[in-house]
Length: 277
Image 1 (cartoon, rainbow, N blue to C red):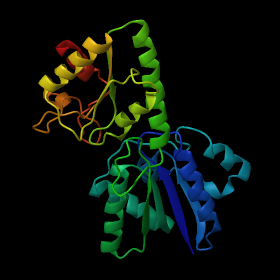
Image 2 (image 1 turned 90 degrees about the vertical axis):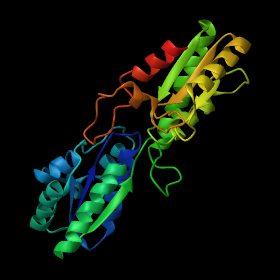
Image 3 (image 1 turned 45 degrees about the vertical axis):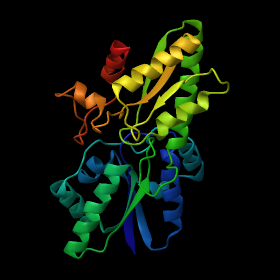
C-alpha cells in the first residue's frame, strides 16, 4: 500500500479538469493506493505540502469539476531544476508517495523525467506519470493532445469573426496565433473558411519558413484580388535562417519562467508586420 499525488501545471485549458477527474476516478479504483493527494498550485504546492484529499470528493463534485474550465487544483509556472526536484522527492519520501501524476505540457514532462531519474538513482520506488495537456499540440507521439481541440475551435471562431469585421471595414487584418514551433493552432484558422473568399486568405506556420519579400508579395496579391486580406500567422514564423521574426525584433525580448522568448502577448510581431505592409 502506498500514496499517490496529482497536480496540474502550466496554462489551463478547457479540458484539463477532465484529465484530472480521469486520474482521480481510476486511482480510486486501485487497491494499491491508500491516499490520493491533490497538490495545490503544482510543484510549488508539493514543496509546501499544500495538499487536499481527493478521495473525499463526491461523484457529483467530480462530474462538475470535469466539465469546468481552468485548473481546479491551481497551477504554477515554476520550472524545477534538480535542486527543486530534490525537495519534491523528499516530500514524496516523507509522505510515502509512490505514484506521481503530473498534468501538463513539455516542461511538465521534463519535470516528471527529472524526478523519476532522481528517484531511481536514490533507490526510491516511484512511478511518475506525465498526463498530456497543451493547446498548441506540440507533444511528441501525440496525435491530438487534450486541450488542442477546444483551443482550435476558439481560433477558428475568432478568425471567423475577424473576417466578418474585415468585410465591413476592408483592409489588412493580421492575427498572430500561439505556437512557437508547432503550427497546429494557426492551421486551425482554416476551419473559419466556408466560402472561397472567406478569411483567412493567408496562413503562415513555423514549420514553413518564409522571407519578408514573399510575405509582402502574398499580401499584395490577395489585396489586389479581393480588396482586403485576413492573415493568420504563427508567433513562431521564421525567415529561411530559421530564426523567428519576433526574436529578431527584440534582442532584449522578455522571457518567461522557462527561459523562452515571449513571442506572443506583446503585439510586437503584429505591429512589425503591419508596418512592413
